[in-house]
Length: 115
Length: 114
Image (cartoon, rainbow over all chains, first blue to last red; front, side, top):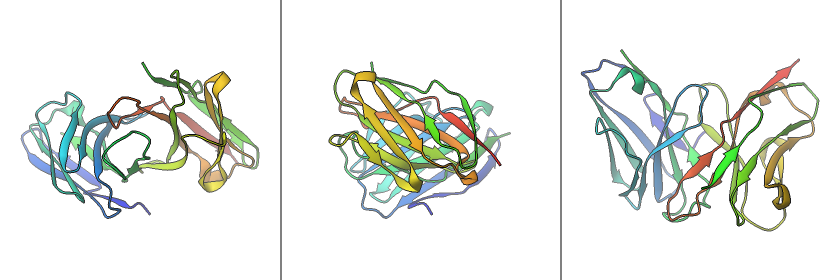
C-alpha cells in the first residue's frame, strides 16, 4: 500500500478537454513532486513544490499547470494536451523542503491517454 | 554533471538464484544513492538508501546494496530471488545542488524463470 494517493488511476481525454490529476499525502512531507514516465523509461521530473511554493519547473509546456492548495495536496491541471503527453504521471513527496538526501515516496500514478 | 548508469537493460535469473544489479554513478564526493523498484502498472517503491556510514545497506524485501567508492558503484543484491521480484529496478542519485532532483538510471528489467 502506498502512502501517496493519486486519482484517478486511469484517464482518457481528448485534446480539447480540461482535466485534473490529484495527489494526496498524509505523511507530513513538505516537498511534493510531479513526474512524467514514458514506457520503458525512468521518470522525468516536471515540477517540485517545497512548502507549498513552486520550486522547480523543468521547462514543462504551459498546457500542464501545477497547483499546491496545501501541504498535503498537489494537483496537475491539464488542458489542450497532445498525443505525446500520453504517459504515466507520478506524484511523490519527501520529508523536508530542502536537500536531495531525503528519499522520495511515490504514488501508483495516473495512466493518461490522449486521443 | 552527475549521472547514473545501469549497464544491464534486462537480466534473467532463475527463482531461488542470487541476483546482482549493477549501478555506477558519476560524482566526485559521496553521493546520496537510492534503489527503487517498479512493478507493472505501479509507482516506484524505495528499496534502500545510502547517505554515509556503513557501506553495506540493508533494505526491504531482503535486498541489500554495497557502496564502493573506489568503483563508483552501488550494486543491488539479493541472495535468493522470488518470482514476485520480477520488476523494473531503478538506481538513482540525489542531486547535490540546491534542487530536490533525483537523477535516475535507465533501469534494469528483472525477469525470473520458474
